Image (cartoon, rainbow, N blue to C red; front, side, top):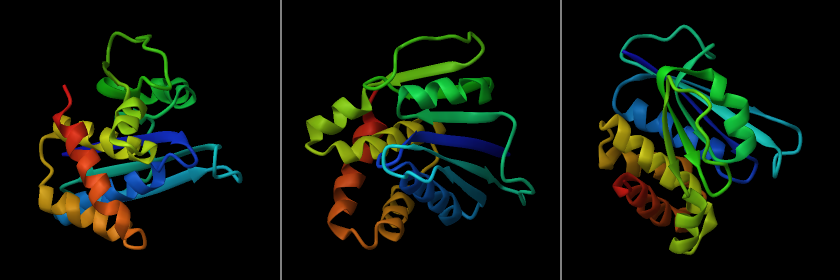
Length: 176
């Protein structure tokens, strides 16, 4: 079993953090993982994405022509990566910052206003964790203990944000 993921948005949206957390969760589940980042010279506000591969067997590639899941946190990410989703794959979209359109009929779409939900929580920075929670519900195999450990590892220098992010993750997991 191998699953491929792209998480994309603008610098400052926590794309790389959430990708690293996802990779850590998979590793804590004793799975093989690759994690590759891509961003421009202008981190904050510029395009940024990461690709994660997860498998129960060794992985011999970093990047894929097509992926199972894309999380698009803005319109530019939706436009750029819609073509990379495999047939029957899933596009998870922040409808706060992207139009609700379905240009392909061979993939699944999940449109949720992640930014609006994060604002309701009182912190727009939680947008990415809400999206990860939605992905975890789809996958159905994240142990909450490993989710917490993933956040603790990646956000170790920002301990005041760990519980807020876990709460946002749980909110996302319970949406829809």
